[in-house]
Length: 421
Image (cartoon, rainbow, N blue to C red; front, side, top):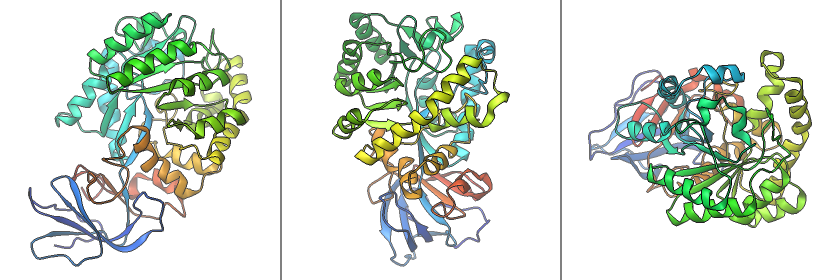
């Protein structure tokens, strides 16, 4: 049952092995590609990786020498965001419209080869609803690790938002003490979140707290971590100031988002922790590249100009110390959903090797999401989340953004997207 390069694939019945043959395998573990690989899947799991001949009882799918990768993972997503190039666009977007946007964007992300994402901030409880709808097969999309509303203090990140976005069902929740933090974390856990998102520094759009300002105390962050970890949840922190990164590391957060300002001493401490850096370079480069197309104030442009060298130097400083770096594109603000692999290209552009950039979107991203026991690499016992790509991303990392090269996306052992699905 070998298939031609452009022909639709047919996988085996439940209980039957499907063998993907003649693949150029990049397994997500950092080794050299393996030519002529065979990957066997059954009932959603990888049951064999090698070169053994196909058995008569197995269904074969010929990869025609194309590159077989782990399904890609985006560690920093906001499915509700859609072309938010100005605060006016945010203001016009209702919670109901945001839900529709999330359904549409989830499909785009899956079509781009991403089988898992972590949504790190939503209105109401849309990310949890999306997670469950995708898991139940009601909506097409990647596996979702869901956060609730972003937790911020008075004067912090959420003050950039219109009033209805900081209401009970808005994007942000104000918290101004350790006790209030504990209560809010518990409330979100009760509503089913997988991850808690804090904003511990300001943001490029101000208008009260800018990126160099720290807005949560170390005690407040530590309370969030203590409570979330007690319930088996993770904590991601928006941290762009020096102290917000230090406080977060001291508190034991799971991931640092952005990490715009990280000095040498903090980078060394970072490397000794279990925390993963998600630098979201797309947030930076979208402003640089889109420029005047964005409705930004002069102060905001000035802030990003100052941040550009700090952001890149901080990330490379961490890389040199051995800090794990995960890919997260923060799309919808400026770059559209489906352009997730732009982040992989940017990681490579500023100094990571193509293999390091690929690992950032596979094995390391899985580690960041605490899913490395399940996805992120192609090896026996993992879930069969795979990307069959018509090209060599190690020689042309930017080609991952070409939708026409996405031959097949396999999610939990079933064809989910691509021109052969």
